[in-house]
Image (cartoon, rainbow, N blue to C red; front, side, top):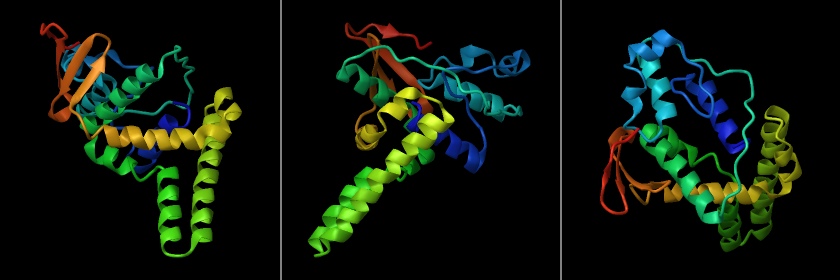
Length: 212
């Protein structure tokens, strides 16, 4: 959250400005949320933080990225819970911003460092491959320090900077997995995502769950 999420938001703001909202904190004007029909208009979407800002932007209001960093604490969770949570986020981005999500696959470094290592070794230039791989690791550690600590002031990012390349690889795997399925699990509901980020939810017993 402190590194990959923050860096992605900063890049989006740099390239196109803020045309969407994002959690965990959004401050809204009463007239802006009223003009889009209230939160009722966002209840059928998985990424409701994204669409509430996007709808407000399309309604003619200006969306601004705050300069304040919001503290956020993640509860302890198993690997499976963490995987499902991050996959749900990635799928939400895929359906909400398909072009941006596709382009985010190019922002990872370690997978391409591994690809460079393999390709250079096959071509008979193993040291070139080692150099590319080492550069990808260094790139991610520098990013972790600059974004996670210098910008977000997350002490965890500073303490675990040497392990962030593993997170980069893990993030790439999640990005790939977001294209495999249309289903997302959240709490006790199994959601089927539709075009534009809309969802249909059904419980394990088949009961239809109204989104929102």
